[in-house]
Image 1 (cartoon, rainbow, N blue to C red):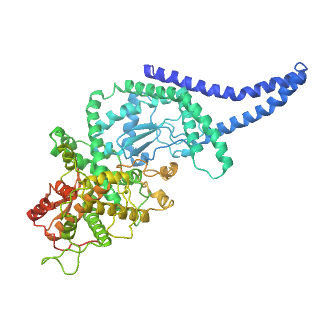
Image 2 (cartoon, one colour):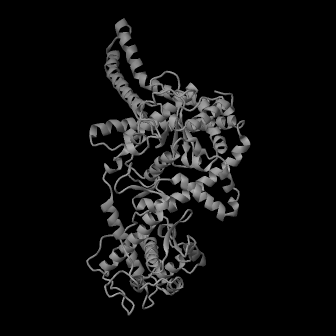
Length: 638
């Protein structure tokens, strides 16, 4: 370990953590030491008498019980599997140039090279210790200067941690920028190799894993009682180590940053701007483009390539991003991979699993989709499914079809049926007095002006926010939840009724389509492509608990008002496609969009909100007439 000030602080904190471990061991051995003294005194004839005999009879079994308990706790701490981030492993054969770059960077920093490289579907990079036996043995083949490669888990010399790289960085950053960004991360292998710091980290990770084991649900009352005691001791030790462990990590980070200053310092300042830009593009791509597809049972198989398209579009629209697109002429970091397409597909599937909770592998109801097929297979299908659900709810409510000379005589679904139902005929207004604060109206309409369902009015998950089953009387809405009741307070009674029923219907569909516990683990071995990792590498998805998926949900559940707005948008877009020649499209920054004469339509969201809140269809009908959309014509549903 170097002489950086941060490294010295980290080692001092590590020694404090190790002293806490030694004190815990001393407390566990203290009763046994006293019992040994009493027994030795009896054998030597020095500690005799009724009092000493009673102390021996009392302390000896207590010492045995304490030793057994300490041994059990130590066994749980040592064998409990530490948490491991779900990643896509990258073997050296799949990315020799990337391994070479990292190895050269470690040589320049004079630190051990990482033992392996993995990718995560997030805009972050870190070092992760995976030397625990539960994480599986490393690859059997040698990898040159990569520290610890080809050795078994029981080797005596320390093993460097695994370098985890955010997959969006590889596609958006250039090779020089990626090297500059990874310099402080790779420099952290130096302090990590120090025996005291490594031992302190293992102890803290073991305690954390023991707490997780004790918190796992169990049916056996005996095991629950035993593990409850283990958890109490582990939590007590964790509280004692918490402050020192945090300061240890801060010291390691400071030492790594200080050591990395001598490597590409000027380029790293520029590269940090690309980190923020990549994060913004990745978040926008997930919430507005990938999320609608995930809800349809499709997962985009080139998310990282989509980041480049989204950020290129941003640089075209935003003058603040001017100059970023000119970087695309340089060599991208994804060229360091032998098969970037296969790696992108593995990372995209893992992103869907983490952020949406999809299955571990492709299947009949969970298939990949290319960006070229996204408008037809995701956008068009999503709008027509939402429109069909809207008309099913109207049928259940007993709403009659539109009448008039231009209305179809077959009772086919039309946009006029929806508009006529939501029009407030008696001017009853909203359920409660509507707030007239202009800032509120601006906040409602500022979300987007693009008629794109999930990508326009809201970008929330499809989980319903409440609502009960259909009541016996069709005209009575189901009792809304408290959140929905507050959300629907500014709408007309008909809008509130329809919104509550849509929320209930969507909840029923999701409940019936929810996969069983075993479905999420089906085909777990297919999560990483053969190009992403060697056959000897254990499947990383088998090493973390997937019962709480999604681990990182992107959005809170949509409210009933937002569901109604999304379904109205879908119905309008279906009418535009079937009667005015509009087409579904994909906007890299806003997601699904409606194209009319090859251009994006706009200004639809405020008109839909006017219909929902005031029951006034006049602005919307004027917009439809302007584009040549005929609401009385039937539309095609799924």
